[in-house]
Image (cartoon, rainbow, N blue to C red; front, side):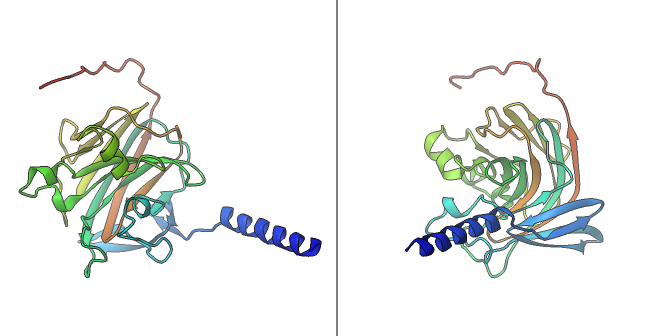
Length: 253
């Protein structure tokens, strides 16, 4: 009996070690190195431009439409390994989103965006992404779900919808499938603003991010049914702007 217990303990330790030392495939793209976390990826040419093509790997991280929130907005992204201490500043990237055909799930919407302040072990991060399929749809309710903020692991999309006023962590943006979108995210403390293309003013503001991890990696994100293309990722780190103008509180409109 004692010998059996020792063997079982050693096996458990070995499994834990393997889990923590997982190796990911890496891709070089324009002097940047990306680590593929539960996505497939390659460098291709799209409309004459070199791009990083990413799709979620459903074998590595399965999807369950009957258990939706727990199997989306998860550890499926390409991590930029050249920078591990992003806290405040600007993240800008060009993105192009297509739907997989056939669709693996009827609710696919071209999910594509950015993860930031990612913890080393993928245990926490912040994110802003878009659903380009509904960005210009002739339905205001659907348009209001075009942009999504979430904070992994405790505040995914459905938890935010259930526990915060409508529109607190979702919004609209003038985006569409199969066209290049420039997303720029300005991060400052607990506030994040998202700008689309060359618009002077932000399309979406997160007034209070909910994550506890204050600095970390940056990643390029796609989810179920999305073929995502990325290029021209630019990152600028800045110190916290302490004298930012206070936002006016609006109780009623």
